[in-house]
Image 1: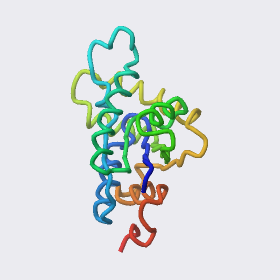
Image 2: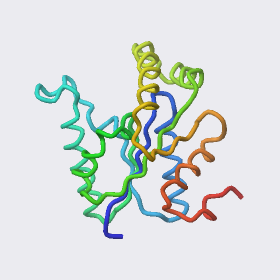
Image 3: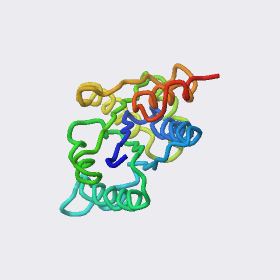
Amino acid sequence: MDHAEVLLIGGRAGVGKTTVGWEVSALLRAAAVPHAVIEGDFMGQVHPAPEADPHRSEITERNLTAVWENFARLGYRRLIYTNTASVLPEATGMFERAMGANVRMTRVLLTASDATARERLVGRELGSELEKELTGSVRKGRLLDQRATAGTVRVMTGLGPVIDIAREVVAATGWIGQHSIRSS
């Protein structure tokens, strides 16, 4: 494989992006498929935002580029990237610049009911930002539903075990044969 491929796992807060991303990685490891994982939320975690980069998109791209360069130098060609907005059209350029113009992108939008997302956030957000996360999750869920790039695979979470969701996500990539990811 001479080109890079990225699995973009997007979705509102509380939908299970990180959990599904790690389970996808577990399936790929079990099938001996080389890959790397980046939790995109960490790529721009600076405060305050750089003066010329109020949305932290430039620092995110610079960090993604640097980390991917290190992975690629070691021979990795597949990346799992989890981040709320990674499936939106404006994210395409960042991945092309960071990973190469011919990067193959598989976009998966994880969805969940408002009740499921709320339940997960209430269990996860133990600090002062619960209300902010709840409000933002609903707003971003609607935005993602309306604006996700054409061809984005939509996968509902909250209806079954994470392993089944991860199998559906892996199937969208074509990275391992269908016979390898079915349950026994």
